[in-house]
Structure formats: structure tokens, C-alpha cells
Length: 86
Image 1: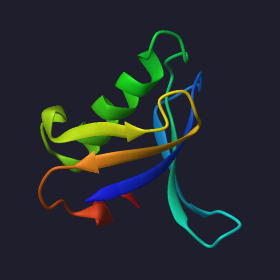
Image 2: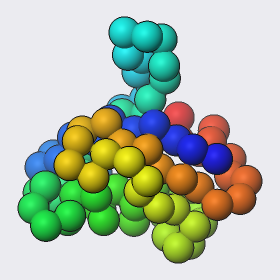
Image 3: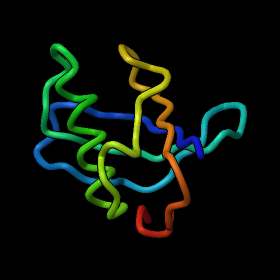
């Protein structure tokens, strides 16, 4: 399963701000993390936060696109309950 995420680094708290939609109508999850976007810290914080929120090991999540972009693609190995993200 692939999940589109718009990441906002350097936030006051790690949080999910719901779902958004781009100009083409594609949905993405809006996520904030406290980590700075330096040397992959914000990306790692995103993986850890999503894994904890979904209740799965972080080894089941991987960043497959958007390493240096705010819009990222996260690959999730196996089935997860996405309702936990709302």
C-alpha cells in the first residue's frame, strides 16, 4: 500500500492534520513533525511517527519518493487500518 504525505517539519508537535487534496484531486495525509529537515531527520521522524500511530513496526514503512520534497510517498508493507490516521 502506498500513502501520499505532505510533511511540515519544525512543528511545535508531532501531529496529523487530516487529509488534503491537490489540484488534480489526489488525496494526501497532512503530517507535522518537530524534527528539522536536516540530514533526513524529518523523514525519519515521519516514519517513526506513522509507525507508532498505525501500531506497526517502523520496518514496515519506507520512503519511496520525495526525499527532499514536502510531498512524500510512503510504502507500507502489509495491511493497515488507515482509519487510525484520521
